[in-house]
Each structure stands twice: as structure tokens, then as C-alpha cells.
Image 1 (tube, rainbow, N blue to C red):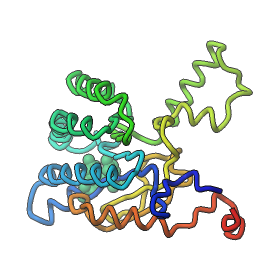
Image 2: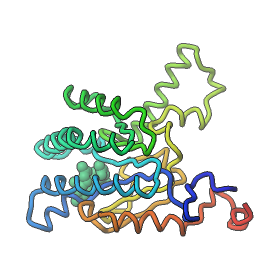
Image 3: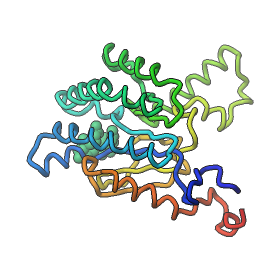
Length: 250
Ligand code: IPE
Ligand code: IPE
Ligand code: MG
């Protein structure tokens, strides 16, 4: 196998598609006697640096978990600050993304966001639509179960409208209806903040992703930390169900 799932520059395997659960903002702030909101603000710098680092390292797709479908249950004030921050960052950063040939997209059920924010998102997506350097996907009001459910729903509609045969439903076709279907397979899923769980992130897409957990809190996840994570991918033997010997032969 001429590693189709990797980008073979300098013989080091670079994950083509990385997703990150950016966790630990609240604890980072609390450790400093600050409000949780201050932690989210500091987290923005890590978002910036991770986008730059991914682009620099030749990663083709970076997917960031910014707001889960469950995060609406947080205190109202925190939710509203997160929305404002999202709006602010989008406004400030979209030109830079475009300049760096990065295509921006949001995954998740954005209908629940304000009209103003939805418009911002749509504008950013259309401005950067034809960029090919890297795809930055931000998961907002996203849940892995939601994703699979909405895929099932779109398929059901096609069956009902008789544009699709039940016999033609298979994994590949369901995959095409999930978010991120336009991207390479997810190679690596990183979670900062010390917890070992997926928290309803990319349930379908993470089937064979390499998992990477670190205790570093998101605002402290800098270029050096991200490079350590990227470099660790090269040490992983991905077997996809085969034996180690079979993989070596390929
Ligand atoms: C992650 O940090 C950011 C969001 C969920 C928006 P948290 O806010 O979950 O930080 P902790 O986990 O409470 O430290
Ligand atoms: C996951 O973090 C969601 C995001 C990073 C956006 P949470 O802090 O919401 O996850 P749990 O609640 O610890 O599982
Ligand atoms: Mg958290």
C-alpha cells in the first residue's frame, strides 16, 4: 500500500485530517482565579495557532469542536459570550483564512443561531469556497448523534420520493450524507483537557481515527504541543482490522 491515507513528505506520516475537542478553557481560567469566559477568550489564541500549525505541516483538513449540541445547557451568560466570541472571531479572522488559501465551513445545526451569525457564517463560507490549501471545519451546535440522524433523515426523504432504492443504502452512501463527507477520512482525533471521552463529537467519522489525549488545557495547547501530537501519528501502526504482518507486507 502506498500509504493513501498519508501525506508522505520527508517520509514522515502526516495525518491528512485532524479533529480536535478543544476542552479545558473553564478550568484554565479557574486555576488563575478568572471567570470561565476569560478561559474561552484565551482559547481563541490556541485556535489561531492550531490553524497556522496545521496549514504549515501540510494537514489537509482540520476540524474543531467549538460548541456541542449539549453546550446550550450551560449558564445563559456563558452561552451568550460564546456566541459573541464566535461572531467576533469570524469577523476578525476570515480574511486571514482566505489569504492563506483555507476553505472555511461550519458543521452542525446552525438554524439555532441568530440570523446575524448565520449570515456571517454563510459569507465566510462563500468567500473561501474555492480555496484548496486546507479545509477548516468548525463544529458548532454539532453532535455526532445529530449528524447520523440527519443523514438517516435525508436518505429517508429520498426513498420516500423514490429517488433512491432501499437496496442501495450502504455504509458508503450513508457516509456521503454525513458532515465532512467532502473531506479525507479522519486520521486523528485529539482531545485536550485531560478527559478520555468523545462527548458526542464525530461518532461516525472517528471509526478508525487514531486517538490522542493530553492533559494540557486548551489555552495552553500551543504550536509545540500540536507538533508533538502530529509527530506521534508517525509511530502509530494502523491495522484497520488486519494483522500486523499483513500491514507490514503492504
Ligand atoms: C471547552 O472548554 C470549550 C467549550 C465547551 C465551548 P470548557 O468550557 O468545557 O472548559 P472546562 O472543561 O470546563 O475546563
Ligand atoms: C466538548 O467539551 C465540547 C467542546 C469542546 C466544544 P465539553 O466540556 O462540553 O464535554 P464534557 O461535558 O466534558 O463531556
Ligand atoms: Mg469541558
